[in-house]
Length: 316
Length: 293
Image (cartoon, rainbow over all chains, first blue to last red; front, side, top):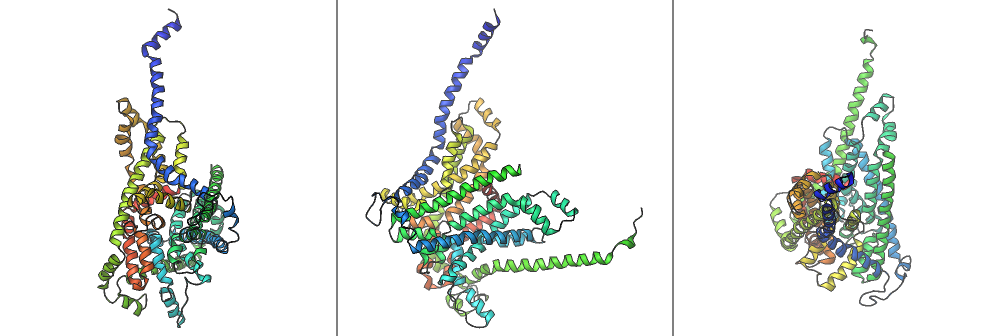
């Protein structure tokens, strides 16, 4: 018997064809099985989240308003009339202020405190104190600060005590103070989380380059500027993106604290969208504003992915 | 070479030590200043719930309460006027059932993605994870309209459906990452012994994934408990309202009743998430680390 025939006989005895057939059958079976396992998650996400997003995009091109115009195509009309809406413009400016403030203040404060508390005795206690607001719900934080800013509230009475005369500032009722006041609450609420995330990043930085620089005579600022900061960049990038998204879509605090402010709808885009749809009944226009918010969020997320890839390549 | 102690500039060393101590003291003072900024609003909250309405408006806001007795009255009035019992039951139902279902569905999907031999593994995952990309504003109008058509508006089932769905994508990410790190030898061994995939999932993968599942469950439970927006849009009725929505309504319509009572309601509403946080601090911080990566 020659070699090839001998191998063939051996393989037949093992049943190689049968094994291959079984494997193919198993693969087919596994796709079905996989779909069974994924079905609940897929149905939930596609049915309750993704289909509504597509529906929203479609709605933004219709004339739907109150009880008329549902399904009537309007082209880009809803988008074209945004710039001429004064409330929209004001909301846009305020949202830009929110994004800027929610990046600058929590990160500056969080980074400052992280550097500061890192080598301090009793740092755990301080860290916990700064982190506490995070465990309250945003709604509860809003309610609490509503009474801090109230006309006869904590802040006015405290200022009155310091200055020696009655202070009566309507912090949440004046155009000039309402946004800064709510931003201050937001910073109070989020700085702790930013600090904890930055501390996690700082803890991951190796000690050797810092010690080497120290021996070479670098001062503390130089070490921070040329060693700590660059090594902290990936964490800072992540925190910045989180802050941009949080500032861009802030809603709960504005809804609770701005409840009595006459210009509430112009406090931010998210509030404007809610107001247009659910209080004025401009469904299609509200959908268009929601699409704009979605586009910006998508752009920021995409930007993050690109930057993240670049940072990963640099650190590798 | 012998060391000559007289060459040491002892004064300089002392000066440096003193400067260091002074620096630490300054730091401590600054740290206490910051901590005060963070504590004072909490202190204000903590003492206001012990004051009667009359006392609240009469005394300075940071004055200690005259007695602890008004607390129970405040709780009783907040509970009754704010319908907090009903709202707490609702939120507890949405939170426990919704987050459990979501985490379980996510574990099933993660199992299929990491363990079964299916085409487009990553595609399926991205499809599920796409649920986290869009801002909440894009869901509001279509869901409101769709719920109205389907009769789900202002129903417990409708609220539960949404909360379950919104809590699926993030746990899927976490559990997929965790499961792909689990050793494959265990489940291969079980398959050799004739176990089918359901047995592998329930008897081998799930018991090994309890830790991360608990962590994401807590994160998602807290999210649902703290949600106000979707309850105002999809279930703004006394019977279906979530606790945060009830707090908002209470503050809006009963503000004349006195800040002390509304503040008591705010504390009551936050209590479960505060207790959870302190009981399960370790899990929470783990979740934070998971969230960041």
